[in-house]
Length: 433
Image 1 (tube, helix red, strand yellow):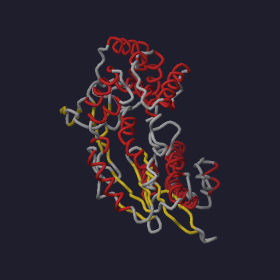
Image 2 (cartoon, one colour; image 1 turned 120 degrees about the vertical axis):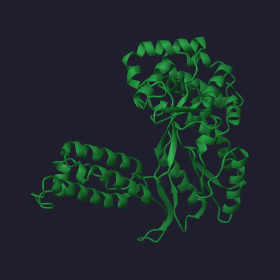
Image 3 (spheres, rainbow, N blue to C red; image 1 turned 180 degrees about the horizontal axis):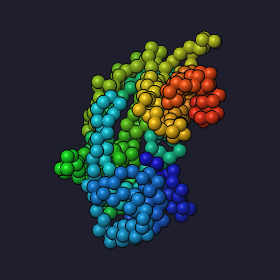
Image 4 (cartoon, rainbow, N blue to C red; image 1 turned 180 degrees about the vertical axis):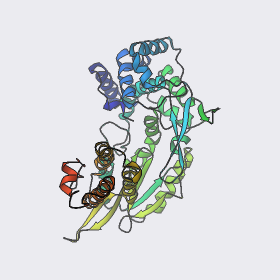
C-alpha cells in the first residue's frame, strides 16, 4: 500500500496538515473539534482518491473496482461528497480473504470497498498530522519520512551504547486483537469532533464478510482493526504509542524499544532482559494484547543474531582489525525467499516465454529485493546471489535454446548483462551511520 503522504498533495491540503500538526505539537492537550468540514472538502477527497487509485487493489463486498471509479471520477466524488455532507455515509462490511504466510499458515486480510478506502485515506490525511505530534521517535512503521533502515540504525545505536540484551517480541494477532473501547479513548484524547469519532467507530465495528464456495458468511467485528484498511496502520501505531513512551522516556530503565508497526525489540543492559520480558508481557496483557511466547525470545547479540524486519543483527569482530562492530545482513529466510521466487520465473515450465519478458519479470523481483536489503553488511550476500542469479539465468537460456549454444562460452557474463539486460546487484554495501 502506498501511504497517503507519498501521493502528491495540493498546497492547501499541505497547509491544513501543517496547521493541525503545529497545533498538536504546541499543546499536548489540544483537541481537534471541527474536522468534519475538512473531511468533506473536495481537495481532501481528491487527494484521497488519487492515493486509492494509485494503489489499485481488489474490489470489496460491493464488487466496485478502482477501474470503475476511474471511469467517472467526477460522479464518484460528487456522490461521496454529498453523502458526507448529508452525514448519510455508512461504511460497508469488510471482505476478508486469507493469504499464505512464509511459515505455511494463513493471515487474514481485510478489503474495504473503494469508497471506504477513500474516506479512510481522507481520515488519515487529517488525523495523521495530529497523532504524528505524539508518536515516539523510535516508532518507524507506516510513518512519513521513516523507514525500516532507520529502525535498524536505532538498533545499532542502542547496541553501541551497551544495550546488548534484546527482548525479541512477537505479538499474537496484534491487528485483530486491539480493544475498540480503549483505542477510541486514545483517539478522543486528540479529537473532540463527535462525527469523526463516530466514523472511526463505524470503521472499527464494520462487519466481516467471508465468501467461500459461493456462500457468504457475516460476523460482527468485536475487536481489532483489520489489516488491509488504510486507517489500520495509524490506529495500530496509536495503540502502542504509550508503550513506546513508557520505555523510551524513562531514564531509569536504561532501555530502548524500537518498533515498526507490530514488530518490536526491547534492548537493555545485560542482566535486565528477563525482568523486562516479564514486564512487557504483563503490560500487553493489561491492555488486551498477548505475547506469542513460542516466537518471542531473549537474545544476547554477542552470542546469536536478532532477526528484525528481514535482517539478522549481531555483534561480530572484524577479521582485519579484530575490532567489534554491529553486523547487519539480509536474513537467511529473506535470501531463501528471493531464490524461491526467482526459481518460479526461471524454470522449465517458463521456457516458452520470450527472453525480454522473462528478464523483465526477474529484474523487477531482484531490484525490489535489493532496494530493500541494500543496507549494512550486505555486500557478501549480494555477491553470492549475483553469481547464483547469473548461473540460474544462464541455465534457463541454455535449456531454452536446446543446449545448442555454449553454456559458458556463448552465455558469458557480459552477454547476460549487456545483450539480455539482466539487472546487476549493487557491488558495494550501502553507507550507513
